Length: 207
Image (cartoon, rainbow, N blue to C red; front, top):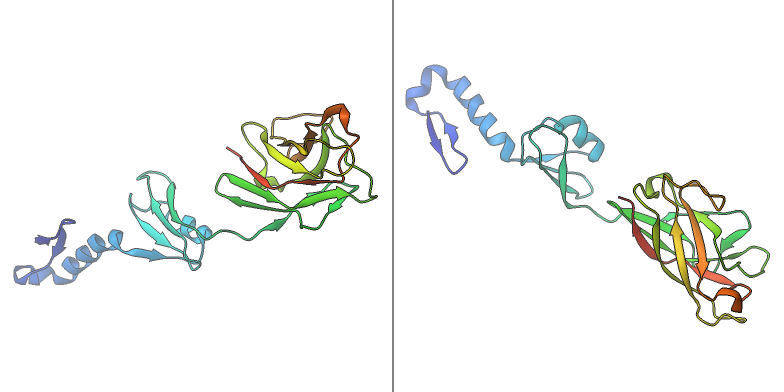
């Protein structure tokens, strides 16, 4: 049977007439791996195309596009995926959102937090190692504690207004919190009694 193109797609010709239906089926099988497959979402992609050939391309209703990178397992590269919506973040008892709603968003293995947190009773937030929030289970770091610099109010005797936020990983056993707890550590030290609010905006990796 004749072939055409770089993909060597088999095209039935006149000499293939006795086996025409089978030849057309073979041509369809050659073309299929090169088509853009359509699914509703990632779950349907995994259900239908886990055993698809290497380089299979699949798109979802939200515009997501994936390319299969393994010929033997369900491994995909994300070509495009729309950003997920921001989600509320759980606050530790005694804390509340302040001016900007505390939220979380995860894209792949990268997690972003944003918003401000204050004490519900209006007192200052202690300076060292205090749990103020908790991220969802799918945003808990798996390999090491997530950490980044964050800002706080400069009211009162606060001088620097910068501290460290830590998100405890799955392997952390601490009196300060469980895995996923967001801890605030001020860099002002003993010069300040505490800060009225902490801005949690920043990001960390979970892998």
